[in-house]
Length: 459
Ligand SMILES: [Zn+2]
Ligand SMILES: [Zn+2]
Image (cartoon, rainbow, N blue to C red; front, side):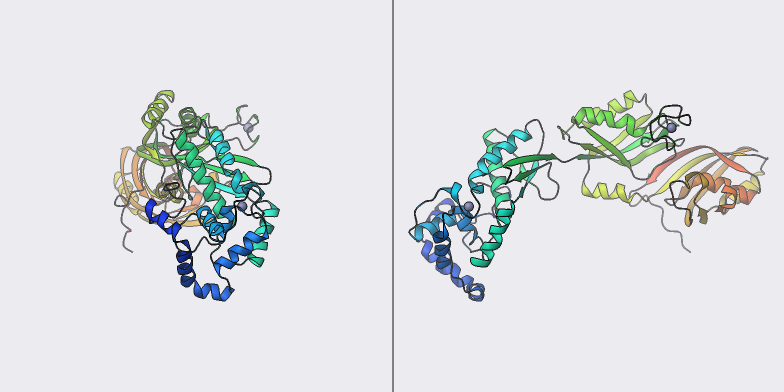
């Protein structure tokens, strides 16, 4: 059956039952009439006389005739229903190209489907969707029909055309040994048929991958860090490169994805970001990688991960690569996860072990933090409250320590240590009364999975 994959509502009858229904058409129409009696009464319509008026108004194709009765029970496609009515009323066949309702659009459907299949050549896809751009004349005809030939069972022209195009397209594909199904939510390919211009346009929707990246080198931004002074043209500040970090995770990862997919461009979207000088260890940070206009979608993700590792000299590793689902996309875009950090800290004066231990313990709890000076150019200047969920530390020497902290999303760790000249309260420096700076920062884990997130501490 044509369109079994999602266009025509599933026909509940077998071939033979359909045939017998055709033979018993008058009975069927009578039955349908009874079913819709109330509707029909409101509009003072009876199907046969409406069909007769439509046929008498001018040459009309079977799909357009049947469409005025699409919602009558019987499970027949519009074209068959139209043919049946024409026959029952004793009207002869008509040239579909001369249909006064669609202007021959339905006769043009096979051509457009063929055109679409041509455009789709060279693109891997499993799903598609058709849309039509109706001409002003067709819009006007739809209104005219509603006014002069009102029917409680009519289906809009646009919907019927979209479905007919999809069915014809599936047939063309099948003849070429390919299959694809319609998808209303996230089609791989989208075709727009401009009826007036007799043109078909193809839009290749992006493909999105999910994964987690580990960043094992320092000085690597997450995405291309365009120099704000020259906006990428190159200046003294950026040493003529146009960028403030030599390279980024995105710049190391994207080319490999483009090679695998044959896409034209794309971008990386991380679930939050770490500073360029911080490493991203552990299970890595969740991210989405979007590729525009991909020619291939089912790519060898193991190859991608291996190539990224090799080409970056081991600076970037990709884990857990997979096609993104709506759930994964939502997770990454929400992006507010607690994180576990390790920080190397330098003190500008010796620190006593007992005082250090006490200060570290006092970090746990709520922290008031004004937006740090260093990010104020791109973030609103405000005071936020975030919690330190756990804190441990050890002195490596009287002027050096290592901290392990679990913090809520959005807490600035460097300022939690330095105090940011009173901008962060409490802070390690403030509690000790000794200036302190983070010299090395690593993100040990992004606590994005339910069960891994530390429980809310009791008030
Ligand atoms: Zn027509
Ligand atoms: Zn610059």
